Image (cartoon, rainbow, N blue to C red; front, side, top):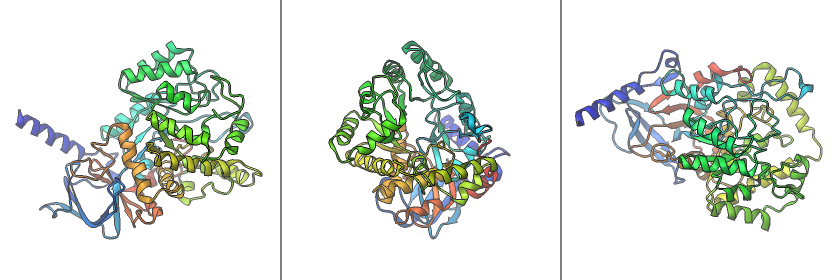
Length: 472
């Protein structure tokens, strides 16, 4: 029996080292034993970085940290580099807003990006993602299968089922629930198909949300939400596990808010802008979420694009876009920059303060990017920007890295395997030039990304994806 088990382990290890012909061009290191030498280790716990370390990877797992280089290992000298756990993206869709053929129609279509997004996530140092809402769940599941089988390059994927949405949705691609029984059946069906979590959306009712939560929980799965009809306090009391985006989308402070009704955007934002982030309303909400063990997913990059003068013009981001998508994005960026009396500077600062206070109160803060909005948030780059913005919000670089690694792994129930650099863990590692523990912008300087001990070349992944975001 022991010999059989050992043979199976060896077989699995060899499979990890045998990429398909389509993936092979993106791989830099695939040796069974690799020693990363003279590297700074940022382990993901928030502990101080350790300089001049040796990290040994054997058959896809971390064998040792600080031990001598074993005989026969492929030695990679990483002087001047840091290694941190692969980022765990917790609001990382596989779709993106398409360029509008007829802008006057205000039609919103979100095509699946099965080709570019997996490559860009991985190139950005993101080794695990939760899709957090799907418009093409079967496509997401098949992308996951292709990646897991070695047929495609990309991160480990945790698949969220299709949006649990109520009547009145703006998105043509979303099913509108007809009641609690439909919510239960929808959740049951997609669990059978392979979904491992669910996301409630803006027009869901409390009854439908409760039915979905109870059904998911009966299978040991979690539910998150980008809510509007249901306020955060109500959702926490119904048993929701996570809330997406944070304070900016919570409508419970809107004067005259009616149960199961999503209020108009303007009065909801105006009411929120008037609140003091240190005042009793927001601080009471934070305490309630912490008491109910509800996590919050930060998506600061997508909100940054709405703040006049802050939307990115990063050459990396622009190069990733389809030319038509780039043109539309830049035009919208100019209009946003020229906006007068925008509430977004207020709301963005308030959101940052909320997230910082929530985490300091003991709440589990997660990190994502949300590649939606009007197109300025791109996989990988947006995940990096999220970590930078957490530092701007008041977290230390080490705290921000923990939010983007260990916290996500903890929520997913995967902390025993990912989210940390420690012996025995999966070798999911983000190697960057510089020291992001002191200069968080160095997180952009990705040199190589290891997933299950295989080292991917970020430049080649980016080259294969550039110019296609907005199309595929």
